[in-house]
Image 1: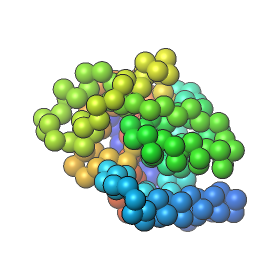
Image 2: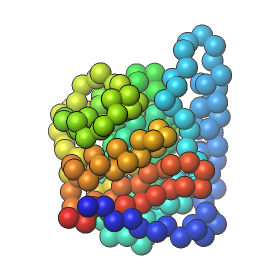
Image 3: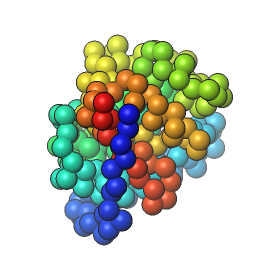
Image 4: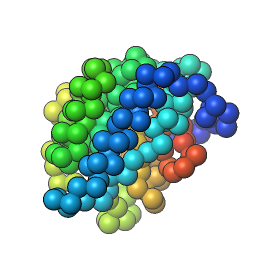
Length: 204
């Protein structure tokens, strides 16, 4: 069972350190340049989040919510900006990404931010998780790649906090997967669109 935690609406007024804000702005410029390239197909499933707001919500969560530990996991890490933010905030961060081009850009982000993040190419869905979906067309089900958890030697229930930016209509599926495979007490943060960051705790 997941219990929603209300993130205060005032969280977006929390100051962001100048160096972090500058790195986020630079990463957004990298994303725009990547998406403007004409010499390769667009990766339709990659959409940038509101990274300043995600920073503020993660920072609030770390200050005011108890955690099982320090391990953080980003599902579909893309440019790995959120993973970098998590590492900058002191978490032991991991990111899973299925697209090699995005993984390469994520590694560039980690190097630029000078933080420690383990990035893995593979499927962020635990084995068997696809069966929880009643819609076979969900984008999360389209990645025919290796099991990332086997690569990193950890299971989903080894992580204290998981972050994802689900495709529209996938948020329920992500919640189902987390509820089925995460440890009791673990936290799930979903960026669901402008000014819409949701936080859940598994309570059984």
